[in-house]
Amino acid sequence: MVIDATTREEQHFGFADGEHPLAVGALRRRDVWADRATVEASYGSRPPLQDLAPEALAGYVRWGFRDRPDGTVELSCRPQTEATIFGSRDRHGPVGSFEALRRVVADGRVPIAVLAGSRTDLDAGWFAAQADLVGVDLQVVDGGHFCLFEESDRGARLVDDNVRALAPPDGAPSEGTSP
Image (tube, rainbow, N blue to C red):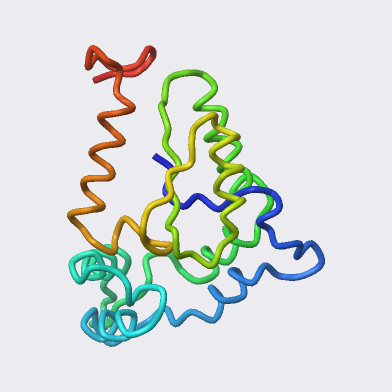
């Protein structure tokens, strides 16, 4: 299931001659914090993470940071790594990732759904184009960029409903996959 996948070529925002704004933002991201409680308090007080359910934010902080020997915590995905991903048009970038996903879908082994939040600042046309690229209908879900993580029960239902809808009718794995 592709959740808010924002990787169409036009989504590079036309920054061919400069840094992608998400890459610039990633480089400014603070990566070392005193502890997870401080991270959670800070992240939970501002957009877009302020909209996450408390348990989703706690999970993000728990698994998105690693302990350092000095007792502090740091981002598991360092700002430079994130900036490289956001700013790349190459094989490690979002455009290449979505093209790879399209190839996986094309071979028939992996069913897919594309979901997008109704209250995102990203262009809704991008999500529709992504759904078209992989041959499915776009599902617009009430919520923001992290719509599946804003209400945990609703997010779990959306995932469960889509997995059930995408499963082969007889419950057997798709051709070429293992159970």
